[in-house]
Structure formats: C-alpha cells, structure tokens
Length: 327
Figure 1: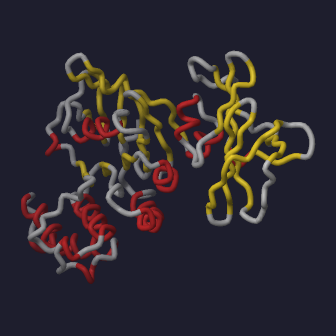
Figure 2: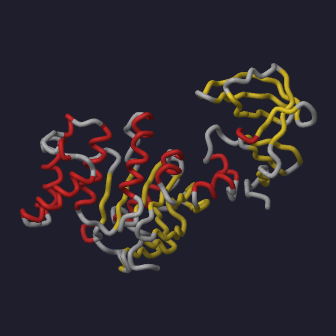
Figure 3: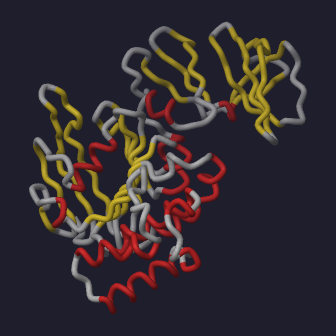
C-alpha cells in the first residue's frame, strides 16, 4: 500500500443481526477518484461513513496515508466531506462559510486569507465570495461545499451523492468540472452515487455494490464490456441490456446498440413502440425469445415487422439461476 492512499481491509459493518457490509476490500491511491455505485441500500454510503469515522466497523482495518485509522475519532482523520445537502450555514457568506472551519481549527488570520483566496480562485468563486447560500445556484453551492472540504487540506475527499439535488442538465454541465477538480490531485477521492452516468463520467474506477458486497471493481469500460454477472450488466448501460433465454439454464445479454436489422436469418420481431432520443431512436420489439430494445438512427423508419440479429462477439452469457457470467 502506498503512503498516500486509502486501503480498506476486509471491512464488515453489522447493525444487530443485520449485515450492512461484507468484508469490503479496496485500495484508492492518491490522485485517483473511485466511485461507489449502486442502488439505495447497497452499502455505498455506509462505506463512506465508515471511512469518515461516523459509523464504527465490526471487523477489518482502514488505512489512510499509511496510518491505521480504524478506531480514530472522526475529527482526527483529516477527512474532507461533501454532503448531499451541502450543509452550508445560511446566515454566512461564501467567504464566511469557508473561514469558519479554519477559525475553529485556530488557523492564523494570514493563513486563512491565503488559503481562502487560493480556493476561491481555483473553484471560480471569487465574484461570489460575499453572497449567501440562498443567493447561489445549486452548482455554485456545490462548489462552495467542495471548497470547504478542500480547505481542510484533507488526506482524502469523500463525496456523498453531491449532485443528487441538481437538475439533469446542470449535472451534465458539472461532470467535466468535477472531474477536473477531483482527479489527478494529491488526495484519494471516494465518490458515492447511484447515477451510472455520473460515475462513468467522473471516476477513474468504479466499484459496483449490491447488498453490502462489491460485485465488481474496474474502469467504466471494463464493467460495461466485461461485467462479471447479470447485476453489473443490468446496472450499467442506458437503455438497459436485453436479456433473452435462448437455451435452458442460459441467458443471452445483448446491448441495444449491438442489435441490427437484417434481411435474412436472425429473429423475427414485431415493432411495438419507439422512443425518440435526439439523433437516435429506441425501438421496442417483441420476439419469440422475449422483449428487445434496439438503438438505431433517428432517420430510419422501421417496418412493423422485421428481422434482427446482433454484432458477433458482443454477446454476454449468464447462468440463469445465479446470474454469474459464463466464460
């Protein structure tokens, strides 16, 4: 383990008889942004809270910057945390919100001024320094919350669903900016989200979680092209992957963009509906093997009845009962 990163070593968290985390192990080196991705209740926020020291671990160890912080109080962990609600003081200006934490930590006035000026410049907040949170947009409040976390000069930055309160267009606009600010710096970053596009657009790697387990850890491309099981395959990808039952005990997974209209062979299909997606359209098809979704150009007018096949080599096979990927 490098001295500048985070390491979770067989972390479990139990609440009474209920297991919230099951021997979670992962490593986040300095400069990397790792997203914890999964549905509600999968354990991603619990993992974040365990690292922050807000929830105790039942077993396992946590290492940060080469130190064992497993039993360390939250205030001594040097963690910068950005909450879903931003948690800004409404009666203070942007500058006041940033200065308060430094005052509590007894940072000198000169050093407070230097740090705040630097972070305001970095996050493009200089012109907003005298505004209160109610006078800011959602994206601006998010940047203030991030600035406050970075001002602590933390050993790690933790973000819990930081864009969940923003509208879809603003999230799209902010993803590149967040990636620029978070990735490649001196901190490891742990980023919790249920939004796959957010995770794929911001993080260097993604840990897909379900029921307190890490199902798969890797780059967005690895997870999308080579999912280890049906859960990962279904969770990543919009529109969702098609699942057909072509033979007993085996399911065939096909991404909508890999399905093609053909003149001969393939499957007979009936068009049951279509959705416009800008320069593409999503066709809803009925076949004898099940429902199919197919992405095509928006310029094409599909017939009511057609035959479809798929790009060879892009098939994903799963065991029907367990959902495990068949090699």
